[in-house]
Image (tube, rainbow, N blue to C red; front, side, top):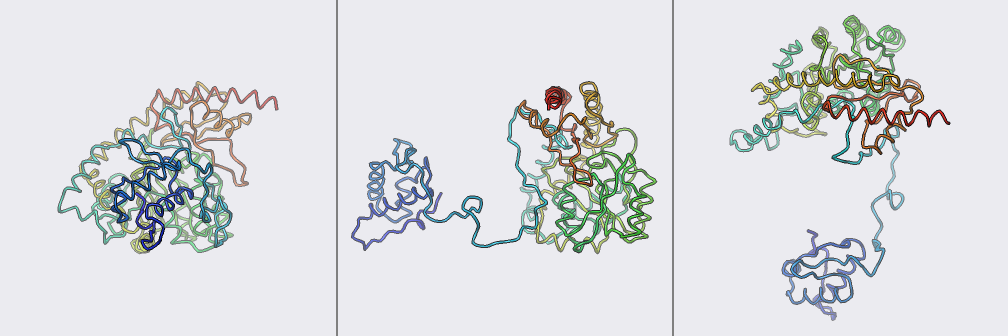
Length: 500
């Protein structure tokens, strides 16, 4: 409710009656747009209490407003600003604070973020099918178990302190302990609680890491086709990109070594399992060579292991962090892909001194985190829920991967090329030159199919005619419907391109 007590100022010594003063001030608020058409005004008793007036005075003002056409008094429903105002296009009497509407603000700044794209959320529709960039199916997440643990925390006198400010900037101690056990058993990481920090997803982890280790102008080696969001985070932190080719065995370490001989990077950003977007994995031989180069040239390796748990053809190679003897690897993981993105829970594994520095920065971004949710997630690890969820999800995603690739090749094999993923949640689908993917997305959206935005480009800045297409969040029926629409749209575009 608007604070009418502070918005309306009445002069009891003025010769004009109070009800007319109130009437005139309400007209000003309506004319300014502070009270838009259709706004329900407070009841006469409520307004009388706020303004310290007799209710009869309020009624007289409202009746005068109704007579002039400013308000409508609806029986048993209240008083509303008229939908047919005397002023057809009411304008604010003061300047707007929106720089997009009224020109420049009273202050100026030099934009440093021209390389960042504005994000426009897609229109929502429950009937629309979405091919995302590789998200988990949140319908499989352990919702009931999580809510049960959150409820128990809220009811517990011993744990209710988790809803208050915390004295830990590295995350809930119980979750860090459970993650240490989980990472030791599943990834061979021999770590302690002081080597792990909880973040709000992996993107916050990347920002903290690069903000901490980079100085302006430092180089970070990335794939020449790589995760654009991470690239932008590097640039936000003042770093420059050193683009290294990607082939079927991952990052080309020969090229990286030649670059090091001229100018060694400060860090290498790597996704050893299912590189985003191409889905290739870094071979074991290249992993060992990369660790040797890190030791020789003293650069950090930022290892993003976002979907280690989903490998379909054989056992995955252990993370590089598990073979790191020189403390060169900063390991980043997340529950966004393994459980649900909305949990916004990720983690960093690094040297304790680096964790300490990262927590100093984190205080000014995330303050005290979300310890109640983190404790609830620790309970999911402790009672085996996460283990059972990963087993169930792995089976579901393996089947969906098989069906997606089969349907894609059956329906569009003559229009696309795609390597069947050996793990992860998405496939890298390259379209023939005659099919413009931007036109394809636009046409598909008009037919009820929303496709993730293709934001990948080569080292020369040229858009790559490919889309990273997620299959994990779609059921078999949903993915077949989606691919049929996609095929039909691609066939519609083909002749249109030929005519040009």
